[in-house]
Length: 226
Image (cartoon, rainbow, N blue to C red; front, side):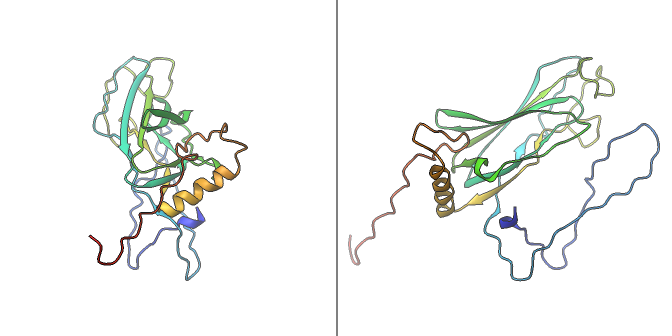
């Protein structure tokens, strides 16, 4: 988002070796272009990118000729977080990915979308629907795989496969984008959501604390007090 531009330090070098190209079965020359948009001089971002990283590339065990296989990954938020976009990334066996937030005994499904490795999609939230998750929320990522004949994408579904960068190996990542919020920013974002709700009977999925009263500021200690 425009409020979360990232700083590219002087003399930095970029490694763009992870560009994905779909195989077509024959030797092909390709031309890739990567574009960057620069903000004007003096621009200062309002938000910084969050530390949330979701996925698991180690414990991937994809069995041959089997539907309804699942992968799971969890992360606990260490800062108030606004999720801007959800981008499922699996490989050929992938058929679905879901994202949910766990706050205490409340479990909210944020996204659950189909996946086709021939056309990877990014889902960008409208600003007034982007999840607002407090520090301490557990974020749960779920991937669903199918290596039966119902899924035409795997090259040879008879083979076991683990994790890896090749197309015949597997990945399980959310490549989406989120930003960290200070407590003041978090309260301001929730206040904007509440202003659009008709009553406390309205509920904002992805904002478990939208109706919670803000925490009072700690009382100032008198000078010289014990």
